[in-house]
Length: 362
Image 1 (tube, rainbow, N blue to C red):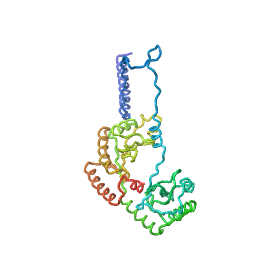
Image 2: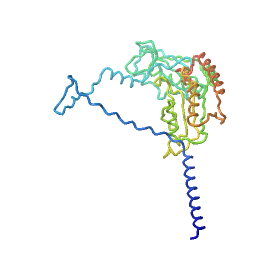
Image 3: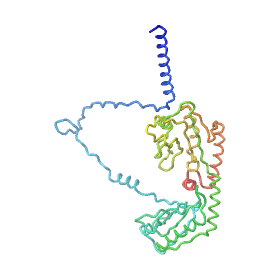
Image 4: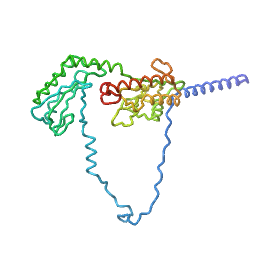
């Protein structure tokens, strides 16, 4: 083989190696950002301590005597009862419900009331509820076995996000309430249908004008994200996984009493892929359902702070639904508008995050 042939062969090999190396580098560069694995924490060795004079020994092996775990019966039963007892607080309110009072000649047991309940708790698209006035109390509650009730009331919600209560739904409400009343031997009084339907329309108009659901989108600038990377970054801001694939939630300061403050979502199919870490995500969404969150949680301010923090740490930009960059001055303008909306909801006694507010905007 001549010197020229050898030179050409060597040159060709070098070119081939360069192409392969460049392809591998490009493939690695285009991989989605991965979550950083947490370092394993080794348990610290337990120091050996000599037993004191009061330490009880059993047997010749020198092992301490086994003590069976004790159970505080009173506190244990109280905790179990608290977890298993259904919520029986009253839900009906004349502000957002059409309410029909039921009078009785004599008290009715909770068992009889439960047996007379209709099979469904809805009238069309609106929630329907039955409440009783306990004979030994002054507050309304959801009927329960083991108590006696001196009066009842049935109610249907006037409006929600599906619209206002209409005449057909009100007629269904009358039929359900009358059937329950007949079963317990009471007498019911209904408000005039046209007046309640008109009240429902007015409430629905108010709700439609004050319903705000906001969202920001975070878009990757250069390198895509893997689902694990998104979840790790979101967890660093306080988000926790939800039951829905591709969705995380920021819990309220009192999670047991209120719903989440913010939602974070990305492609659910990517979250359920066979190898999700090889799935490329280029966008995620931060969302706020304004009427569902207490004003005191400062939800929009936290939404802006988290969006800015995630965009900085994940090398992304904040955009709106029209793919336009969201700048700080735009956030300030939205915040000012929200403060006025909060004031109007408060004035109507339908404050954001309150029980009535959450029911109306659901």
